[in-house]
Amino acid sequence: MKVIRYFILSCMVVLLSCKEDQAPILDFSDPFGDSSDENVPVPGLWESERPILISEQSESQVLIIDSASKGELWSWKASEALSAAEAAWFRQIDEAKAVYNREYVLLTASSGGVALVRIADKKIMFYTNARGNPHSAEVLPDGNIVVSCSTTSDGEGDALKLYKVDSLSAYVPKEVKRYNLTFGHNAVWDLKRAVLWATDDQNLYTYRYNGDSADPELIKQEVFYGLPDKSPHDLFPVYGKDQLYLTTATGIYIFDIASETFSAHPHGKANIKSISDGPQGFGTLVIEPNMSYWTDRLTNIRGVSVFFKPGYKMYKARWFIDNPFSYPKDNPYVQLN
Image (cartoon, rainbow, N blue to C red; front, side, top):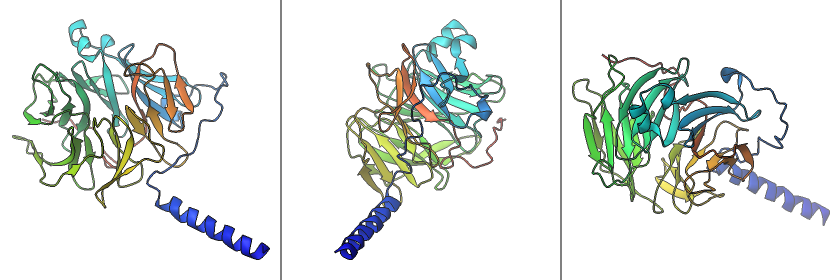
Protein backbone atom coordinates (compact mmCIF):
# COMPACT_ATOMS: atom_id res chain seq x y z
CA MET A 1 0.00 0.00 0.00
CA LYS A 2 2.86 2.38 0.81
CA VAL A 3 4.27 1.84 -2.67
CA ILE A 4 0.87 2.56 -4.26
CA ARG A 5 0.41 5.72 -2.18
CA TYR A 6 3.87 6.93 -3.07
CA PHE A 7 3.17 6.30 -6.75
CA ILE A 8 -0.11 8.25 -6.61
CA LEU A 9 1.50 11.16 -4.78
CA SER A 10 4.36 11.22 -7.29
CA CYS A 11 1.88 11.37 -10.17
CA MET A 12 0.01 14.23 -8.51
CA VAL A 13 3.23 16.21 -8.10
CA VAL A 14 4.13 15.69 -11.75
CA LEU A 15 0.66 16.73 -12.91
CA LEU A 16 0.67 19.83 -10.74
CA SER A 17 4.16 20.73 -11.96
CA CYS A 18 3.02 20.45 -15.58
CA LYS A 19 -0.01 22.57 -14.84
CA GLU A 20 2.20 25.20 -13.22
CA ASP A 21 4.51 25.21 -16.24
CA GLN A 22 1.52 26.05 -18.43
CA ALA A 23 0.13 28.71 -16.10
CA PRO A 24 -0.20 32.09 -17.82
CA ILE A 25 0.91 34.09 -14.79
CA LEU A 26 4.59 34.37 -14.10
CA ASP A 27 4.66 34.63 -10.31
CA PHE A 28 2.07 34.54 -7.51
CA SER A 29 4.63 34.66 -4.71
CA ASP A 30 4.45 37.16 -1.88
CA PRO A 31 7.76 39.04 -1.96
CA PHE A 32 6.68 41.58 0.64
CA GLY A 33 6.11 39.57 3.81
CA ASP A 34 5.91 41.50 7.05
CA SER A 35 7.23 44.89 6.09
CA SER A 36 6.30 46.65 9.32
CA ASP A 37 9.95 47.46 10.13
CA GLU A 38 10.23 51.24 9.92
CA ASN A 39 14.02 51.19 10.13
CA VAL A 40 14.65 49.86 6.63
CA PRO A 41 16.92 52.45 4.95
CA VAL A 42 15.64 54.21 1.84
CA PRO A 43 18.00 53.43 -1.06
CA GLY A 44 18.80 55.69 -3.98
CA LEU A 45 16.51 55.38 -6.99
CA TRP A 46 18.90 53.25 -9.02
CA GLU A 47 19.94 51.18 -6.00
CA SER A 48 16.38 50.13 -5.18
CA GLU A 49 15.81 46.47 -6.03
CA ARG A 50 12.05 46.74 -6.50
CA PRO A 51 10.90 50.30 -7.13
CA ILE A 52 7.26 51.03 -7.95
CA LEU A 53 5.88 53.80 -10.18
CA ILE A 54 2.59 55.25 -8.88
CA SER A 55 -0.01 57.67 -10.27
CA GLU A 56 -1.41 59.62 -7.32
CA GLN A 57 -4.25 62.15 -7.51
CA SER A 58 -4.56 63.73 -4.06
CA GLU A 59 -1.39 65.73 -4.74
CA SER A 60 -1.49 65.47 -8.57
CA GLN A 61 1.81 63.64 -8.70
CA VAL A 62 3.80 60.72 -10.03
CA LEU A 63 5.86 58.84 -7.45
CA ILE A 64 8.54 56.18 -7.45
CA ILE A 65 8.70 54.40 -4.11
CA ASP A 66 10.83 51.59 -2.73
CA SER A 67 8.74 48.52 -1.95
CA ALA A 68 11.00 47.43 0.93
CA SER A 69 11.51 50.67 2.84
CA LYS A 70 8.25 52.33 1.71
CA GLY A 71 10.34 55.42 1.13
CA GLU A 72 9.93 57.92 -1.70
CA LEU A 73 12.66 57.75 -4.35
CA TRP A 74 11.41 60.33 -6.87
CA SER A 75 8.36 62.48 -7.53
CA TRP A 76 7.04 64.88 -10.13
CA LYS A 77 4.28 67.47 -9.82
CA ALA A 78 3.04 69.63 -12.67
CA SER A 79 2.57 72.51 -10.22
CA GLU A 80 6.35 72.63 -9.78
CA ALA A 81 7.07 72.66 -13.51
CA LEU A 82 4.27 74.50 -15.32
CA SER A 83 2.09 77.57 -15.02
CA ALA A 84 -1.02 77.25 -12.87
CA ALA A 85 -3.23 77.07 -15.96
CA GLU A 86 -1.16 74.29 -17.53
CA ALA A 87 -0.67 72.44 -14.25
CA ALA A 88 -4.47 72.19 -14.02
CA TRP A 89 -4.36 69.78 -16.97
CA PHE A 90 -2.56 67.33 -14.66
CA ARG A 91 -4.85 67.43 -11.61
CA GLN A 92 -6.01 63.84 -12.09
CA ILE A 93 -2.95 61.83 -13.14
CA ASP A 94 -4.20 58.37 -14.06
CA GLU A 95 -1.23 56.56 -15.60
CA ALA A 96 2.57 56.60 -15.64
CA LYS A 97 4.87 54.32 -17.65
CA ALA A 98 8.62 53.90 -17.53
CA VAL A 99 10.01 54.38 -21.06
CA TYR A 100 13.37 54.83 -22.79
CA ASN A 101 15.42 52.53 -20.54
CA ARG A 102 13.55 53.83 -17.48
CA GLU A 103 15.13 57.24 -17.90
CA TYR A 104 11.77 58.87 -18.71
CA VAL A 105 8.19 58.66 -17.51
CA LEU A 106 5.22 58.96 -19.85
CA LEU A 107 2.11 60.08 -18.00
CA THR A 108 -1.52 60.96 -18.64
CA ALA A 109 -4.23 62.70 -16.65
CA SER A 110 -7.97 62.39 -17.09
CA SER A 111 -8.09 66.16 -16.62
CA GLY A 112 -6.44 66.43 -20.04
CA GLY A 113 -2.67 66.46 -19.61
CA VAL A 114 -0.12 64.19 -21.26
CA ALA A 115 3.63 64.54 -20.64
CA LEU A 116 6.99 62.88 -21.19
CA VAL A 117 9.31 63.74 -18.29
CA ARG A 118 13.03 63.05 -17.97
CA ILE A 119 13.71 61.51 -14.56
CA ALA A 120 17.24 62.86 -14.05
CA ASP A 121 16.25 66.55 -13.93
CA LYS A 122 12.43 66.41 -14.23
CA LYS A 123 12.60 68.25 -17.53
CA ILE A 124 9.43 68.04 -19.63
CA MET A 125 10.31 66.80 -23.11
CA PHE A 126 6.73 66.78 -24.43
CA TYR A 127 3.39 67.90 -23.10
CA THR A 128 -0.09 68.72 -24.32
CA ASN A 129 -3.67 69.17 -23.23
CA ALA A 130 -5.22 66.26 -25.10
CA ARG A 131 -8.63 66.87 -23.53
CA GLY A 132 -11.08 63.99 -23.98
CA ASN A 133 -10.29 62.21 -20.66
CA PRO A 134 -6.88 60.63 -21.45
CA HIS A 135 -6.32 57.31 -19.68
CA SER A 136 -3.18 55.96 -21.34
CA ALA A 137 -0.42 56.83 -23.78
CA GLU A 138 2.38 55.05 -25.60
CA VAL A 139 5.64 56.01 -27.26
CA LEU A 140 5.95 54.81 -30.85
CA PRO A 141 9.21 53.57 -32.40
CA ASP A 142 10.04 56.94 -33.95
CA GLY A 143 9.38 58.88 -30.75
CA ASN A 144 5.90 60.13 -31.57
CA ILE A 145 3.20 59.58 -28.96
CA VAL A 146 -0.31 58.13 -29.14
CA VAL A 147 -2.93 58.92 -26.48
CA SER A 148 -6.03 56.89 -25.64
CA CYS A 149 -8.99 59.04 -24.59
CA SER A 150 -12.15 57.82 -22.92
CA THR A 151 -15.76 58.97 -23.21
CA THR A 152 -16.60 62.64 -22.65
CA SER A 153 -19.48 64.97 -23.38
CA ASP A 154 -17.35 67.62 -25.08
CA GLY A 155 -16.67 65.68 -28.28
CA GLU A 156 -12.96 65.32 -27.52
CA GLY A 157 -13.04 61.78 -26.16
CA ASP A 158 -13.63 58.29 -27.59
CA ALA A 159 -10.44 58.52 -29.59
CA LEU A 160 -6.84 57.57 -30.19
CA LYS A 161 -4.86 60.76 -30.80
CA LEU A 162 -1.50 60.76 -32.54
CA TYR A 163 0.98 63.50 -31.60
CA LYS A 164 4.09 64.45 -33.50
CA VAL A 165 6.79 65.19 -30.95
CA ASP A 166 8.70 68.39 -31.64
CA SER A 167 12.29 68.65 -30.40
CA LEU A 168 12.17 72.44 -30.69
CA SER A 169 9.08 72.87 -28.53
CA ALA A 170 8.01 70.65 -25.64
CA TYR A 171 4.45 71.95 -25.86
CA VAL A 172 2.47 70.46 -28.75
CA PRO A 173 -0.97 72.07 -28.98
CA LYS A 174 -2.78 69.60 -31.23
CA GLU A 175 -2.75 66.01 -32.46
CA VAL A 176 -1.89 65.34 -36.11
CA LYS A 177 -4.34 62.45 -36.47
CA ARG A 178 -7.39 61.25 -34.58
CA TYR A 179 -9.06 57.83 -34.74
CA ASN A 180 -12.42 56.81 -33.31
CA LEU A 181 -12.10 54.52 -30.27
CA THR A 182 -15.13 54.39 -27.97
CA PHE A 183 -14.22 54.22 -24.27
CA GLY A 184 -10.48 54.35 -24.98
CA HIS A 185 -8.56 53.39 -21.85
CA ASN A 186 -5.29 51.80 -22.94
CA ALA A 187 -2.47 51.61 -25.50
CA VAL A 188 0.41 49.10 -25.61
CA TRP A 189 3.15 48.86 -28.22
CA ASP A 190 4.09 45.32 -29.29
CA LEU A 191 7.76 45.31 -30.30
CA LYS A 192 7.71 41.77 -31.71
CA ARG A 193 4.79 42.37 -34.08
CA ALA A 194 5.28 46.11 -34.60
CA VAL A 195 1.66 46.88 -33.72
CA LEU A 196 -0.24 48.95 -31.17
CA TRP A 197 -2.82 47.14 -29.02
CA ALA A 198 -5.87 49.05 -27.73
CA THR A 199 -9.45 48.31 -26.71
CA ASP A 200 -12.71 50.10 -27.27
CA ASP A 201 -15.79 49.12 -25.25
CA GLN A 202 -16.25 45.82 -27.12
CA ASN A 203 -13.07 44.66 -28.89
CA LEU A 204 -9.29 44.43 -28.74
CA TYR A 205 -7.62 45.91 -31.84
CA THR A 206 -4.19 46.15 -33.39
CA TYR A 207 -2.89 49.10 -35.38
CA ARG A 208 0.07 49.22 -37.73
CA TYR A 209 2.13 52.39 -37.55
CA ASN A 210 3.48 54.25 -40.52
CA GLY A 211 6.15 56.50 -39.09
CA ASP A 212 6.56 58.66 -42.18
CA SER A 213 8.08 61.85 -40.82
CA ALA A 214 5.87 64.06 -42.97
CA ASP A 215 2.61 62.20 -42.46
CA PRO A 216 2.63 59.58 -39.65
CA GLU A 217 -0.49 57.46 -39.24
CA LEU A 218 -2.02 54.48 -37.45
CA ILE A 219 -3.74 51.85 -39.57
CA LYS A 220 -6.33 49.65 -37.88
CA GLN A 221 -5.99 45.97 -38.79
CA GLU A 222 -8.98 43.98 -40.03
CA VAL A 223 -8.63 41.20 -37.45
CA PHE A 224 -9.93 42.05 -33.98
CA TYR A 225 -10.90 40.14 -30.84
CA GLY A 226 -14.16 40.32 -28.90
CA LEU A 227 -13.71 41.18 -25.24
CA PRO A 228 -14.80 38.73 -22.52
CA ASP A 229 -16.40 41.43 -20.39
CA LYS A 230 -17.66 45.02 -20.31
CA SER A 231 -15.83 48.19 -19.29
CA PRO A 232 -12.24 47.29 -20.23
CA HIS A 233 -9.70 49.31 -18.31
CA ASP A 234 -6.03 48.39 -17.94
CA LEU A 235 -4.14 46.62 -20.72
CA PHE A 236 -0.53 45.75 -19.92
CA PRO A 237 2.02 43.07 -20.83
CA VAL A 238 2.43 39.94 -18.70
CA TYR A 239 6.12 40.10 -17.87
CA GLY A 240 8.26 37.60 -19.77
CA LYS A 241 5.35 36.15 -21.74
CA ASP A 242 3.64 36.77 -25.04
CA GLN A 243 0.45 37.79 -23.28
CA LEU A 244 -1.51 40.83 -22.15
CA TYR A 245 -3.39 41.48 -18.93
CA LEU A 246 -6.85 43.01 -19.29
CA THR A 247 -8.85 44.32 -16.35
CA THR A 248 -12.61 44.94 -16.59
CA ALA A 249 -15.56 45.90 -14.40
CA THR A 250 -15.87 42.39 -12.99
CA GLY A 251 -12.56 40.56 -13.47
CA ILE A 252 -9.01 40.17 -14.74
CA TYR A 253 -8.22 38.31 -17.95
CA ILE A 254 -5.14 37.20 -19.82
CA PHE A 255 -5.02 37.44 -23.59
CA ASP A 256 -2.69 34.86 -25.11
CA ILE A 257 -1.52 36.34 -28.39
CA ALA A 258 -0.44 33.08 -30.04
CA SER A 259 -3.75 31.29 -29.43
CA GLU A 260 -5.80 34.52 -29.72
CA THR A 261 -7.82 33.62 -26.62
CA PHE A 262 -8.79 35.22 -23.33
CA SER A 263 -8.66 33.25 -20.08
CA ALA A 264 -9.86 34.30 -16.64
CA HIS A 265 -7.14 35.18 -14.14
CA PRO A 266 -7.14 32.60 -11.31
CA HIS A 267 -7.09 35.42 -8.75
CA GLY A 268 -9.52 37.69 -10.57
CA LYS A 269 -10.98 40.75 -8.85
CA ALA A 270 -13.54 43.34 -9.91
CA ASN A 271 -12.81 46.94 -10.86
CA ILE A 272 -9.01 46.66 -10.87
CA LYS A 273 -7.50 49.90 -12.18
CA SER A 274 -4.04 48.50 -12.95
CA ILE A 275 -2.07 45.27 -12.85
CA SER A 276 1.69 44.80 -13.13
CA ASP A 277 4.10 41.93 -12.57
CA GLY A 278 7.83 41.40 -13.04
CA PRO A 279 10.61 38.84 -12.95
CA GLN A 280 10.49 35.83 -10.64
CA GLY A 281 9.96 36.92 -7.05
CA PHE A 282 8.39 40.29 -7.81
CA GLY A 283 4.77 39.23 -7.45
CA THR A 284 1.79 40.95 -9.09
CA LEU A 285 0.74 44.48 -8.09
CA VAL A 286 -2.85 45.65 -8.38
CA ILE A 287 -4.69 48.88 -7.70
CA GLU A 288 -8.02 47.90 -6.16
CA PRO A 289 -10.04 51.00 -5.22
CA ASN A 290 -11.18 51.28 -1.61
CA MET A 291 -12.78 54.70 -2.13
CA SER A 292 -14.41 55.87 -5.34
CA TYR A 293 -11.81 55.40 -8.12
CA TRP A 294 -8.75 55.35 -5.88
CA THR A 295 -7.00 53.59 -3.05
CA ASP A 296 -4.69 54.65 -0.24
CA ARG A 297 -3.27 51.12 -0.09
CA LEU A 298 -1.38 49.35 -2.86
CA THR A 299 -1.51 45.55 -2.61
CA ASN A 300 -0.38 42.48 -4.47
CA ILE A 301 -2.83 40.12 -6.16
CA ARG A 302 -3.32 38.18 -2.91
CA GLY A 303 -4.26 41.31 -0.97
CA VAL A 304 -0.93 41.71 0.85
CA SER A 305 -0.18 45.37 1.55
CA VAL A 306 2.75 46.79 -0.41
CA PHE A 307 2.45 50.52 0.27
CA PHE A 308 0.02 52.60 2.34
CA LYS A 309 -0.35 56.30 2.93
CA PRO A 310 -3.49 57.85 4.44
CA GLY A 311 -5.10 60.44 2.19
CA TYR A 312 -3.41 59.24 -0.97
CA LYS A 313 -5.55 58.58 -4.04
CA MET A 314 -3.54 56.06 -6.03
CA TYR A 315 -5.00 55.24 -9.43
CA LYS A 316 -2.39 53.04 -11.15
CA ALA A 317 0.88 51.42 -10.14
CA ARG A 318 3.58 49.63 -12.14
CA TRP A 319 6.83 47.99 -11.23
CA PHE A 320 9.50 50.49 -12.26
CA ILE A 321 11.31 48.00 -14.49
CA ASP A 322 12.13 47.57 -18.17
CA ASN A 323 9.29 46.47 -20.45
CA PRO A 324 10.77 44.08 -23.06
CA PHE A 325 7.35 43.42 -24.59
CA SER A 326 7.14 47.00 -25.82
CA TYR A 327 10.62 48.43 -26.09
CA PRO A 328 14.08 47.25 -27.26
CA LYS A 329 16.79 46.71 -24.67
CA ASP A 330 18.76 49.71 -25.87
CA ASN A 331 16.09 52.34 -26.44
CA PRO A 332 17.53 55.82 -25.85
CA TYR A 333 15.38 58.88 -26.24
CA VAL A 334 16.08 60.56 -29.57
CA GLN A 335 14.80 64.04 -30.20
CA LEU A 336 12.99 64.38 -33.52
CA ASN A 337 13.66 67.08 -36.06
